[in-house]
Image (cartoon, rainbow, N blue to C red; front, side, top):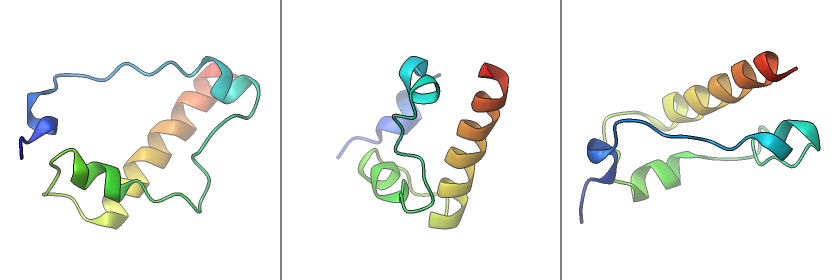
Length: 65
Protein backbone atom coordinates (compact mmCIF):
# COMPACT_ATOMS: atom_id res chain seq x y z
CA UNK A 1 0.00 0.00 0.00
CA UNK A 2 1.32 3.45 -0.93
CA UNK A 3 1.66 6.08 1.79
CA UNK A 4 -0.51 8.69 0.05
CA UNK A 5 -0.15 11.38 2.71
CA UNK A 6 3.62 11.62 2.36
CA UNK A 7 3.27 12.43 -1.34
CA UNK A 8 0.92 15.40 -0.86
CA UNK A 9 2.27 18.94 -0.43
CA UNK A 10 -1.11 20.55 0.18
CA UNK A 11 -4.83 20.01 0.03
CA UNK A 12 -7.35 22.38 -1.53
CA UNK A 13 -10.85 22.24 -0.10
CA UNK A 14 -13.96 23.61 -1.78
CA UNK A 15 -15.91 24.74 1.26
CA UNK A 16 -18.48 26.82 -0.66
CA UNK A 17 -21.73 25.12 0.29
CA UNK A 18 -20.35 23.48 3.43
CA UNK A 19 -20.59 26.67 5.48
CA UNK A 20 -23.20 28.44 3.45
CA UNK A 21 -25.90 25.75 3.55
CA UNK A 22 -24.84 23.65 6.52
CA UNK A 23 -23.96 20.71 4.27
CA UNK A 24 -21.15 19.35 6.34
CA UNK A 25 -19.92 16.11 7.81
CA UNK A 26 -17.81 17.69 10.52
CA UNK A 27 -20.03 17.20 13.55
CA UNK A 28 -18.79 15.56 16.76
CA UNK A 29 -20.09 12.16 15.62
CA UNK A 30 -17.66 11.99 12.68
CA UNK A 31 -14.44 10.02 13.00
CA UNK A 32 -11.80 11.11 10.47
CA UNK A 33 -9.16 8.68 11.69
CA UNK A 34 -10.23 5.82 9.42
CA UNK A 35 -9.79 8.00 6.34
CA UNK A 36 -6.40 9.14 7.66
CA UNK A 37 -5.31 5.49 8.05
CA UNK A 38 -6.65 4.52 4.60
CA UNK A 39 -4.51 7.30 3.11
CA UNK A 40 -1.42 5.83 4.79
CA UNK A 41 -1.32 7.96 7.95
CA UNK A 42 0.41 6.25 10.86
CA UNK A 43 1.98 8.88 13.12
CA UNK A 44 -1.03 10.61 14.66
CA UNK A 45 -3.51 9.27 17.20
CA UNK A 46 -7.24 9.11 16.55
CA UNK A 47 -7.80 12.02 18.94
CA UNK A 48 -5.11 14.13 17.24
CA UNK A 49 -6.51 13.56 13.76
CA UNK A 50 -10.06 14.37 14.79
CA UNK A 51 -8.98 17.51 16.68
CA UNK A 52 -6.85 18.76 13.78
CA UNK A 53 -9.69 18.33 11.27
CA UNK A 54 -12.25 20.00 13.52
CA UNK A 55 -9.91 22.87 14.42
CA UNK A 56 -9.20 23.46 10.74
CA UNK A 57 -12.90 23.33 9.87
CA UNK A 58 -13.85 25.69 12.70
CA UNK A 59 -11.06 28.12 11.77
CA UNK A 60 -12.17 28.21 8.13
CA UNK A 61 -15.75 28.74 9.27
CA UNK A 62 -14.73 31.82 11.26
CA UNK A 63 -12.84 33.22 8.29
CA UNK A 64 -15.73 32.51 5.93
CA UNK A 65 -18.34 34.24 8.06
